[in-house]
Amino acid sequence: MSAHCQVTGRRPGFGNTVSHSNRRTSRRWNPNIQTKTYYLPSEGRRIRLQVSTKGIKVIDRDGIEAVVARLRRDGVRI
Image (cartoon, rainbow, N blue to C red; front, side, top):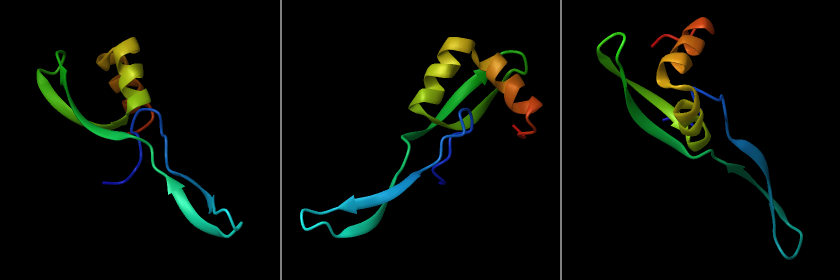
């Protein structure tokens, strides 16, 4: 599963871990991606989305119908 939110577009951040001796090693900060199932009443079916926790809050705020309409307008196949 890729670390990419379908709603907000959040992806991993990259950087360095710096030790006490100032050695730097590469690391990445993954977003908190959850696989959630939502029911679309207009189509009478369920859809599965990979969303971050911020994306879940966006869906709660705007509604699943508005978010799906926005995703389809941007060319995402659902």
